[in-house]
Image 1 (cartoon, one colour):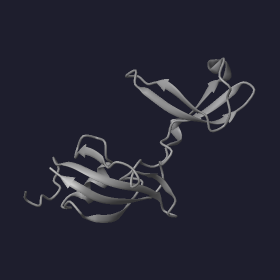
Image 2: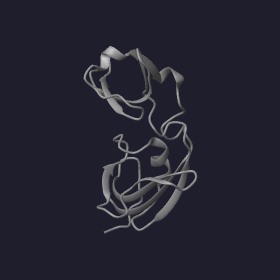
Image 3: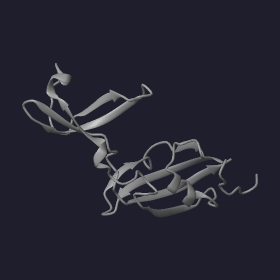
Image 4: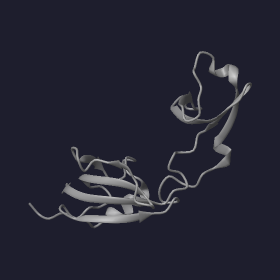
Length: 143
């Protein structure tokens, strides 16, 4: 079997770790089964996909990804305030993840950041928005 390089339409199997700039690991599958995905299918960040182009099975690399190449910059417009009555029956506390339906009726998670007597503030930014990330990858297979 030829030693294939990753291209824009490759199917790849890989181990990965996502780290914050200070080295804290926020996600990893190095101690589990490797992930399998197709380049361009939306399962990997576009900035990471660009870094993977040209790699081969067996390659191990670490890449720095800027917020713009990752989960974007934080957007203050993604922080919304709602009437507390909208959350009837929910034990609200800061850090609670709540789910809403967006305009396309898809699930839109948000994190409760402020709970007041009459209002609740929810942040819909991705938790890693605004963060520079380090991705460690080990390519297992390329098809």
